[in-house]
Image 1 (tube, one colour):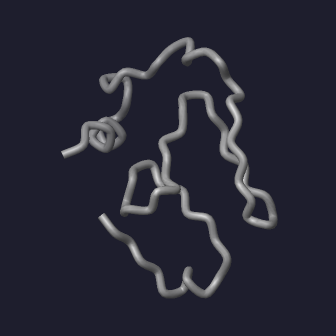
Image 2 (cartoon, helix red, strand yellow):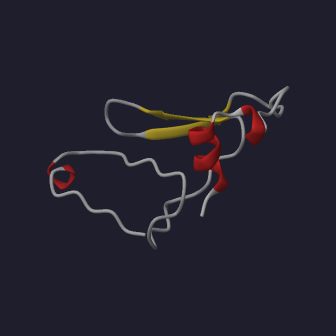
Length: 74
């Protein structure tokens, strides 16, 4: 997958993607409980703010039809 934005190319920006979209080696998955902070200079830092998994994970059957479909993939 590749996404381009002519308007975005004109401005300083940080793009956050949940999946690797191209061959850029700077992409990496975030860990559960990790927080991404981007400051006003576009410097990003990551830190683990929750060191345990969620107390209750939401199951697909607990979501409405649209939300459930979005999590099932193709």
